[in-house]
Length: 486
Ligand code: NAD
Image (tube, rainbow, N blue to C red; front, side, top):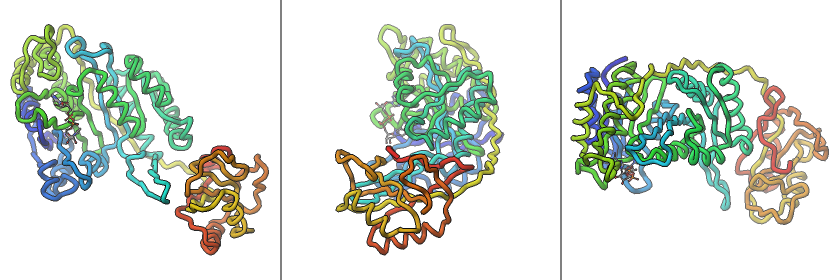
């Protein structure tokens, strides 16, 4: 791998901790050279809302690895998250965050914890597709793809195998989101069969989060969707006792980014007090990724020995346990002095080679058949019964109204008066020959022209459709959820 890496020192404490980390990398003779780029606050304030100038992209795309200091996002609504921009633009699909306790040197309620969260990084509710559709209703689309899901799950298993991890836990909410999270859980079971030596379990995200928070040592590698992973990885980092310790990797096919999980800490910036450990740990993940596990091990063990010797920055300093409160530079010097040493009380690390994911997505051959449509109607004045009567009249003989839901709950036929209704009605239509009064009647294929015709007729009847969603069968299996009560 090319040994030139892109480096952004970032804002706040960024330059201090980056200098400290580069000094340790150089002292360990990693043989790296650095292409520095400027991203973050200065770039934002110069009027660039993405925080990254055009020339920095060229450097980022030239080198396979990016070591990024924390950046300050200025207050105000016009600024886009630099991290989200970089992750999506460069296809950094996996966010990997190891969270380990360093008891007793860092105070924690969970001395044995050693968890790695592998979070899907590009999809889910972070696709950023949001709409206000009516006065009452706002919507955010949860986009989960087969290739995105297969890739992150394979990555989690490959990571577990490469790093000698024994279990992978999948966290989902498939009891509620049966189509999206259900697919994620199915994929986990399917891909998991290829890794029979690794223990596997699936948990619902709510109880899973509660258990991670109370019994983190029951977990080893966790794989989950973007939003759940965002939350759970902060929970795990916090449980270790200090956010100043954890690094994270954003892995892509061609380019990967490594950074501390904490921010730019403006309260201590420029004072020489910051703990460079999180960024150092991120740099060690980077070395493993670049095929230099021995260098990563050398540095990690020296770092653990430094912690054991009681040389602690202010954020982890403990009266009675720590020997000396040190600043950023002194801490880095202490790590350099200990290169070649191993810790005696903390478990020393043995780094394996990087995770080698050979992912080639093969789109399955599936028979896809249109079998209905949901029209989303905006009407603040109507009732479900009145709307159903108007829709029935308008679409007679073309398609047939099966049900109406409001916020997902059936309100027609036979809705309850207690159900609160907004101005946003989901009206589900099926083919004209389906007996909608027969609960056992199945969805059957219809011609697309019926939907276009029905939309025209509904519009002519003065009913406002704000969105349509086609309903499909995939190899005869419903590709959509039923309405609650359908
Ligand atoms: P923060 O992580 O910067 O700071 C939270 C607290 O932790 C502060 O008290 C800080 O002093 C302390 N802290 C953080 N890192 C430390 C370290 N290495 N050593 C010692 N103490 C440390 O979070 P914040 O204050 O909410 O955010 C500050 C800025 O950072 C904001 O502009 C935010 O947008 C940005 N931020 C950037 C990233 C990133 O670049 N990946 C991540 C989070 C926040």
